Image (cartoon, rainbow over all chains, first blue to last red):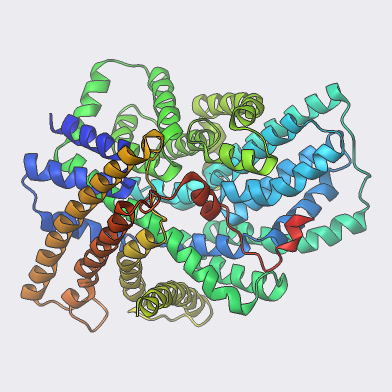
Length: 426
Length: 181
């Protein structure tokens, strides 16, 4: 009863356009006042305490690092490097667009910014070289989503903080699925390129590869510092994020010189705004999760689901549908925040690995970015490619099939996610 | 006057973020190179984080950066849409009032207990006071947004689709020419 009331209120608020954070907060408060015996004081305490959850401190730092590196200059360097290494294959420009998107998305942390920065440059080039507009737009739209899977990933930080699983391990677990997805999309490009006889770029000599690598390498080193530092035990993910932010500042201002010192305050305020927007939702979601547990809703849900005698594979299938549906309407962090407290205990009861579940959720969120009606990447691509939304959706569909196939692989072969962190002994 | 407040808000928020980042970075350096550290560092960082988010909530309303699902309300007629937005603002104000009440009682309880923070030589209630303050500021900004909506600005609370794309994809362009090529 209380569960239904809580969820009904939450969806009602969200439906009429109450900000997601306020919807989560107010539905929690109302429910606890009506059904629980907790006071407003303890809810306020829960809210305030969210900013003292150590793993969540990584969020402002990763956002700051990404904001410093979200420049056209970084995008150009990634494109040049990607072109130098894969341009000479058949369909080379498309392969380069994919690789450059993966690089840029990983360091900037923003899927829509990737579509704009890499997409706007690469689409013009591809169309000029004889690629169809649909092919180019579909590729750019989907390639931009790779960033939330390739570490550092803010969605993973959020998942790790709610479930108290190791963020370092989650990051490592994202590596192989990220590479797998990129590889599958590359194979798709290869097949299409051979069929349509798409052009190659002239092969870049070693000197060119080296010089472009030296430019792009400074940005890519960010990922190595984070992953290497966490793996070697030099720092926690939160410290890694702070180091990344300071490193990104030096690279952007002194090495790349994309950003002048006078623009640094603007970067700081942009990053603060994004941080606040996310944290406002997260703090309210922590109250929401607190209300769920005090009313023992996850417990009841777990008993109900296990009582159905659902086999694990069926549960995973249902879970994927649920996540995909939710990902269609809300942005990734909100979905993870709302669904994790309910789904996690059930999954644990069924013996699903928490790290595997995390990767699964992130891949689902990635797909949500390119499915209508709210898929943000679709809107951005439509703008960049100057296409109608309907045409963009059609163009993205074949790639969506690739993503869904990869999702099935990642769902039913847990070792794709778990082999690397286990092998590293994390 | 209003401009001064707005500017102060931005300086405070970016200052807090810079402070947190540099402090955490120094902590890593101190530990690995000099094998030492400041005990108060972590607590100073987390309380700054709290202040950043709590004061920033209001700034988020002013800059229209809070996320909401507007796919249904957007399709309403302007008149109906405006009514819905005003109702939404009322809902937000109820939320602010309840949270403000909870935050005040929290601060009051900490005041009565009179404990200091673990590592910072300051009483806990003083460090928590940003919470009622934050919700007070937030309600002020919601009222402001409500007035704007009443006068017909339908994007007063939640940005329109175009505005949001603009903020989501905005890039740091000292070198804006690069993309135009």
